[in-house]
Structure formats: C-alpha cells, structure tokens
Length: 437
Image 1 (cartoon, rainbow, N blue to C red):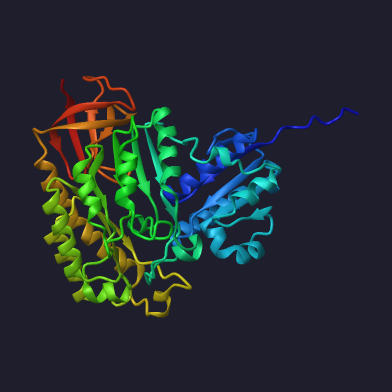
Image 2 (cartoon, rainbow, N blue to C red):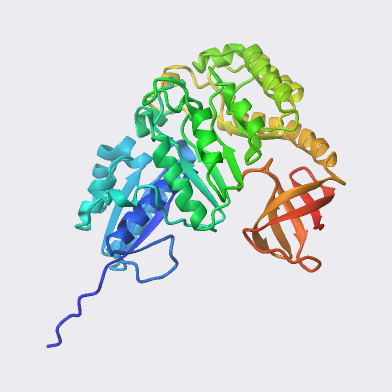
C-alpha cells in the first residue's frame, strides 16, 4: 500500500466588507507568511485547503453576503474540497454564539481582535517585528492605513462598537514606521481610515492629536498624497484643516460622514450636533480651503424621518453641494439604540428616498465636473481597464469617487505613476482627460 504524501497547507483569506477589514486581512496575511505559512488573499487556485473568511456584520445585506460565503465554503468542506474553514471579523464577533449553533461545520469562529488566537491554530506566533509591515492585496501605489480601532460614539443606528469595541489609537511612531515601510515599497498614497479619525489620540495623548499625526506622516519621504477618511463632525478639530492647508502632500479632500440634514433626526441618531452646526462647519472648512472636495454619507429612512425631515435632508444636499455623496438606507440593527424605535418605512420606501437623494446629487456632481473641463490636474493612474487608463485626482478616493479616463490608444501611462492630465469632457461621475507635458 502506498503511503499518503503529506500535503502542505495552503491558506486562502477571503475579505468581506470595508477597507478596515481589508487592512485586517493584510495584517493576518503578513503574519502567516512571516511564520512561513503558504497564504494568499482571494486566490483563484483550487488547491487551497484552509479558508479564513473575514466577515462583515454592518448591515443586513453585508451580513447575508458573509453568511452566504461561509455556507459556500462549508459546502466545499463537506464535498472534501477544503479541509478547514475559519471565520473571523465583525459578523463573527457579533453573532459568535448563534453562528456556532447554526453552522457547526465551521472549525472555529474568532472576533475582531483575535489575531493571536487565529495564528495559534497554525502553531504560529504573533511576530511583533512585523508591526508596521503589511503585504498589500492590491497595487502597491496606494495603501489604507488604520490609525485607530473601535469607536466610543453612541450613534443610535450603529453596531460598530458592538463588533469593534471601544476606541484605541495607534501610536504616532508606529504609524510613521508603517508609512516609511510603505514608501520604501513603492506606496505613494496613504488613505487614513478609522471608525472615527477625529477622535485620534484622545486615549493615548489625552487630546485630539490627528493634526500632529498628519504632520509626522507628511514628513515621510516618498509619500505624495495623504487622504483623510471617516472624520466625525462633532467636535471636529480645525487644526487638521490648518495642516491640510500647510502641507502640499495632504490631499485637499475630507470624508466627513454627516448622516442627515434634519436636526430632529440627528437628535434621534444621537449625533451630538444640529443641521445648523454641520452647515457652519462645512462653510468654515471651505472658507479655509476653497478648493477642498468634501465627501459625505447620509442615511435615508432612519426612525423619526417623516416626509418633512426627508425634505430637510434634500434641501440640505441642494444647499451644501457636496463634491461627493454616498447614501445608505437605514438598517434596523438589534442591540443598537435605534432598534427600540419604530422602523416604520418599508425597504422600498427607504430605497426610493435614497434614489431621490442620488438624483439630486447627480446634477450637482455633473455641474461641478463641467467646471473642470479645460483644467489640468495631477492624476494618479490606478489601473488599465478596457481601452482606458483609469486614474484619480487628489479630490477623489479609491473605488468610491470620480475617475479620470485617459484613452489608451492615444496615451501611454504606467500604473502607479502620476501624470498631468487636461480634462476634455465630463459626465456626472467621470472625467475624460489627455496627458499633457
């Protein structure tokens, strides 16, 4: 009888949800490889025998997608196609007990801060010398940088504190070291992310210290763009705008989730602010940096949003003319404060409201983009797709904002390089450009 050859484990990490989850997957990938384990991210190879699914538990659709993915791999395990399925991330943190009962075929469930426990399954150690180093799962020219974990805010609709815990800032030195490592490996753009980036430093420095972090990161040689995401508006530290103004490598871009345009709904959301204060903040920021691009997100259909309150939000969008806008429909999440309120709108009604807001935004975006025709911008080339090189200006973030399309039959660009592009045409969400100089 022939002895069975021992096959070496091959690990495949699957990531659901947001960029914060992607960072967690990249850290896990780095630690596994640092321990000599054969691991990849979303590999199409058929011979991966261990699957780790990093789940999202944010809203209903995301939860369903995560569950479907778990079931897909559990099914593959039952067919003998994979040996082990591990589940980590937000859904696993939030519903571990339920999931263990419902899907017992999963080999182990882990929470959002259980990296050492996952490594233990592979007889691997958490390597502290790898802190700050991270294998990227996409082109190396941009990288997400998570500056803090968790959130202390009491927003009524949000389950993130249930899944990610309280706010913990990462020290400036650690983040600078990570930025230096990224720059040495070809990263030109850092996208700073957190559950709440403006809270940065309160726990470890006893003050809001985002401006100081930005200054230190801006000093890192080789980093051309630093982009700020998820800046909570209440108690917004205006010294951040001062630094943005001073430093040319900090993008004139701010992602500031405002969530609503009605004071009554903002109160129900427990956002600690009013529509008037939000408008005042946006005006102040634009006064200091007139060319800034402001991205915000809004929620349609939160409990307490009647026709009047919804119309207030539409008027708010029309008045503020945000350069970038995303709209979510309200998701009724158990164990959140809003779960005790009456969720009176159907999903269809919420979606109609979200669609209406996006129609208003389309016109605003079209008008703003038309003003760019004839102007020349520094553009970072992200990819080649179809007949175009696809890039972004400093006013646009990866995957969520406008793109600049450059005809590949007329111009050659290298992915990861900057070019000067003159805008020749524009639609609601795309700019068309030609390389100059």
